Amino acid sequence: MVVRQNYLDKIKRFLGKDTIIILTGQRRVGKSVILRLFRDEILSSGDANVIYVDKEKKEFDSIQTYRDLNAHIDSKRVSGRKNYILIDEIQDISEFERSLRNYYEEPDVEIIVTGSNSKMLSSDLSTIIGGRYKEIYIQALSFDEFLNFHQLPESDDALAKYIQCGGLPGLMKIGLDEADVREYQTDVCSTVLLKDVVMRNQIRNVPFLENLLHFLADNTGKIISSNNIAKYMKSQGENVTPTAVINYIKYLCEAYVIHKVSRYDIHGKKLFESNEKYYFEDHGLRNALVGGSREGDIEKVIENIVYNHLVRLGYEVTVGQLQAGEVDFVCTKPGGGRVYVQASYLIADDITRNREFGNLQAIKDNYPKYVISMTPLVTRLDYDGITHLHLRTFLTEGL
Image 1 (cartoon, rainbow, N blue to C red):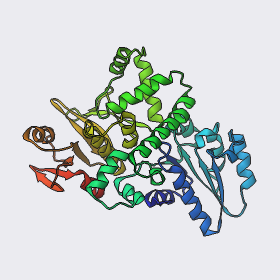
Image 2 (cartoon, rainbow, N blue to C red):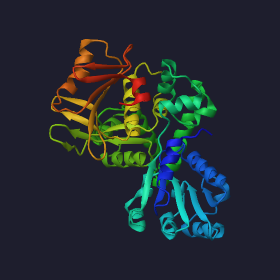
Image 3 (tube, one colour):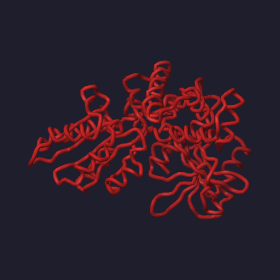
Image 4 (cartoon, rainbow, N blue to C red):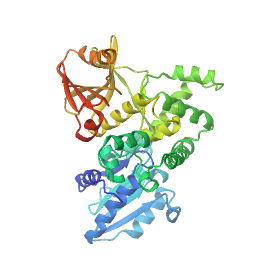
């Protein structure tokens, strides 16, 4: 197992604060391994008791409700020692939040759990435990992590593999042969849809869900409305309402398969309430849904990669709306500070340069502005106050 130390450090930062630590994210992005690594580290210290439950293992099938979980914890708890309660995929236990409430304030207990559905952070959970939890969002592999997992030197060839294959940690065992990668990603997609979307939300129209996911993959980074999706599906012989579209997209977002990004009126300084963009948690899974090579959709993939890395850097990301154009990303951090980012494939002619740089120049404030592309011979250049970064530089050094 490759250690993703930054996530382990985040867990340790919140120990001892009467806080439930919840690792969230799409299934198969590495939450379980991070939890096991933390378990092994605690066990190696020799002075703690670990109560570990993995709901994906058959030995824990009998733990179905919070009462079952309470009984299991009570049977394993050791008085006089620090007890670490570690539960993987806790959303599969009915009313689990009632069990967490029983233990999280105990002086000898630390609770760390994982979940693949954002419903577990619903208002019900907040009400029952008084909001005393810390969510640590686990993402698919960054480019640096991808290099580490696959033992690759940083290069354009490695970046091409990352663009094509994505960042699911399980590929370390599968390898980077394209046929094997696509088979694995298809299996992961099927598992996520079945366990975290179809079964959890009791979906009956599974073909529509699959068609919707393919539509979103093909339109990654485009402004989308539920009405337009419903009209498109009707043209394909699928009669669904805009309300059904909204609900199904919500289910996909709750499973962390896709992320909804709202539009922000840069001049009016307000969020729009409709017509959002959607990006995939793992661009490799998105590529598997679309199929083929990346020659025809490289712009979409780069935009998806840039979005995810901006989130990884700690930014809250929206889509910037101007009166006569659009800025791909308006990025803010808690406590203030803002940057504007455009993502492009190649800045190879004046038309592209005017479009990508011109929209940023139209913003009359002094916040930093960036264009990120794969233009050859560019690492970090200044163009009329706008920084032009190569994608590799951005993924390895940040902004």
